Amino acid sequence: AHGYYNSRWNECIHSSHDLSDMVFIDNYFFNKDMVIHFNSTVGVYVGYTELGVYNARNWNNNHDQLQQERAKVEGHCRRNAELYQAAATDKT
Image 1 (cartoon, rainbow, N blue to C red):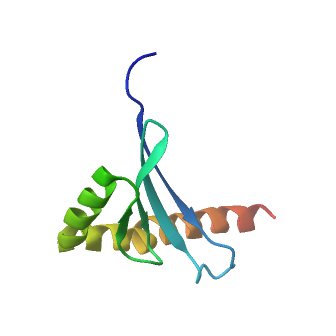
Image 2 (cartoon, rainbow, N blue to C red; image 1 turned 90 degrees about the horizontal axis):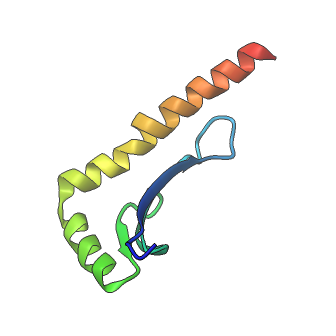
């Protein structure tokens, strides 16, 4: 194919049972190269290409967007992990 490849993936990572080390990661790719990355531990976007650096600067200056991304640790990651842990615990 001679088109463009654009993707985004995010994930929640933790290793402790109490979820105290929960991290939310959000990655953006273009043509299989990472362009921009958000890690809740760092708390800001980091750009890896010229376009990524440009977007990271703009997105980091948008305080509402940054707060929404940071809030995904609690609102998305921790909430879902608690549901999954409860379901697994109930089955054992």
